[in-house]
Image 1 (cartoon, rainbow, N blue to C red):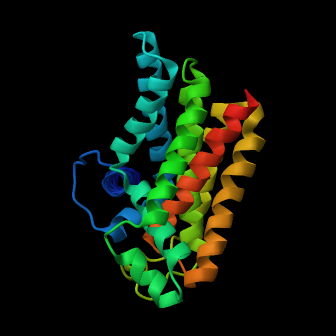
Image 2 (tube, rainbow, N blue to C red):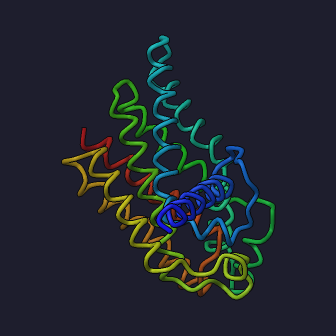
Image 3 (cartoon, one colour):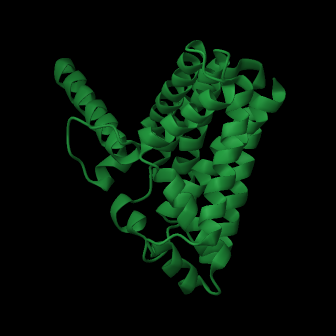
Length: 256
């Protein structure tokens, strides 16, 4: 009986991690899963975020070691993070910015977010966020702390998406609501524990900076979006992740 329970647990861990990798990254996975299965594994999202961040940070260190300028190395870090996720969150940020800031009514804002074309607000939002991340990374890219900073930012920003899905109702026509469902309290708590552990290990005395900025920035984004479109969708989730990650990196760079 005990062996069966362990086997079932390992199968679930394997399924959750593979499905979440397929949803949140551009990394090929060893099994196909739909969005409902992927969101069942929200507990591991901070872990995957830390993995993406640390990997991107490592590329920056290697770039500096080869003699590249810190600014160029920082651009490699940011570019690697975007490539590893397939630009998923940046795409959400662009659509959310266009809809939340450009619409005249709830329905028009949702319609704008569903439009695949990117408008002025979307382009500007992505440019500004990427510039902030690049400048923040450039401050520490020559040191090993860059991996810790990227891991902490990646972990906390993915947890923000989990707690947002749990607390904020989805918009009526959101595919997120129809397919993903609401994460359980147990999954949210597990995700919170993993994110906090990663942050504490990664940045130690600067934990308060990470948590404060990493929660406050996306909270503003989520509250604004909730007021403007009366709910949550995938684009707004992406925008909240970008706000959290950017705020953490900027705060940590300033603290050095």
